[in-house]
Length: 252
Image (cartoon, rainbow, N blue to C red; front, top):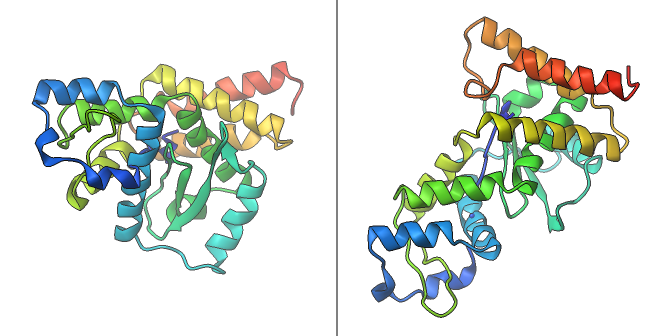
């Protein structure tokens, strides 16, 4: 959704602590930087996500532990498992009126309070499942490659380990913003929808929230209000796809 926002997504974002030891002489030309971006390893993507997520957290207003938002999110998170393809996940709530959510390759999952205000628990579960799908299916990694390859930020590589060079705080913040607001293809959005549907069923959670969250978004779209799904396939069509799957599986 990036259900993102609903699902906004990408949500997505990324760097190993050792990156700070990068030799300044290792800065690459723009062409080589693009190559480095497209050859990022999973470990490098996770490392970059660590730092980008920290930078975004530092800029956001976080709901305090024990707050109604955090208590509710912890309950929702318990129904979705504690990892994405083996990568441990961690949750936080950004206190903002924006309707959004995103997940990063390092398991960083952030949900906006505006989304929680608008959605039921089941719908928030579905949205998070969708964001997890973008990570599990490699969409977030591709989004990072695009952001780096397009020279949105400067990168450098250590010759031996091939580890992405350290980025400044402003560059990491820029990378995080671009990842969270990056656009996925319609195919990727559909794949993430189906991933969420399958995850919810596997975890014994009703997939109905996936359909109803899209239906709520469709109303927003009809009212021409901005949402995380503005750049996604029509929400009404996505809701119908989920309802068709439910009907085929005998789920009411």
